Length: 247
Image (cartoon, rainbow, N blue to C red):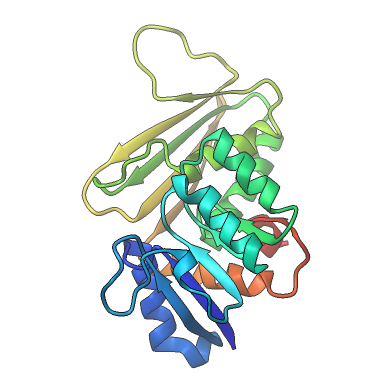
C-alpha cells in the first residue's frame, strides 16, 4: 500500500486529499504516512516536512510556489518521488524543480485533472488544423484565487505556442490597439465559488471551435494527485506531467 506524505494538509486541496485517503484507503491502495502544514500542531499535523522522518513512498504537495526549494531538498534527501500540484512558480523556482527531477521522479502539473490534459491535447490539434485562426483563452475561478492568469491557462497557452511559432501570450486586453494575429490572449474572471473553468476559442472568419473543461468538485484534483503519485512508483528520476499519463 502506497504511503503518502501530504504537504499543505490543512489547505483546501490538501485536506481534500487527506480526507479521501482516510475514507477510501483500501480502494485507493494508499495510506496517509503524514500530514504536514505550516499551520500544524493540531490533530497530529507536522508543521514542517523535516519533522517527519518515518516511512513514506511519495510526497503530494499542495502548498505555495515559494516552498519549491525546501520541498525538493527534503524529497532528494529522503529519495522520495514528489507530486507538485502548486502553481505560480517563478522561473527561478521552476529551475529548482527541473534540477530536482535529475535526482528523483518528479511529477509537476498546474492542473491535476486528466480532463484538462486532454483539453490541452485537443487544443493543440485544433490549432494545427487552423493555423490562421485567432486563439483566445477564458479562465474562471473562485473569488479567493490570488494568481491570475491561472497556472492551467498559462500551461494551455504555452502548449499552443508549441504549434504556433511566433505566437505571443498576452494577459487581458484594453485600449484601442488592434489585435495582432499572433496573439494568444488569456482572460481571467474571478467570481463566486467556481472550482475551475477553462475554455479555448479557435476562430476563423467562417467558423469557431470552442473547447471547454469545467471542474465540478475539487475531488477531481485529489483523484488526479493520487493517480500521479501511483504513476511515479518505480519510475526513474525524471520530470513527468499529465501528458505522460494520458499517453
